[in-house]
Image (cartoon, rainbow, N blue to C red; front, side, top):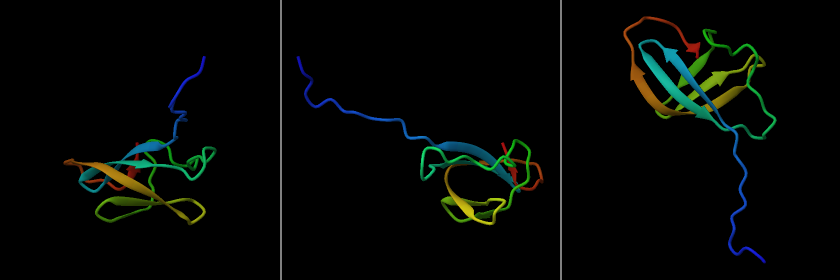
Length: 87
């Protein structure tokens, strides 16, 4: 007995976040370079983070000064005035 053309796949880990910047919530995804990579422990719900934006990406600054590039999947307008926060 044998199987022909059976795809062998593994799950690709990724992170999702919701970040409020001014009057917009951004939903974004990040795919780590390797499966053991983790997000900084300081990035908890409600935490303030430094962020820079372009049309399709968020660049979040890590505590060590490096940046992670997140792909924006959705923008949601909000009415509150607030800084950048992780959810």
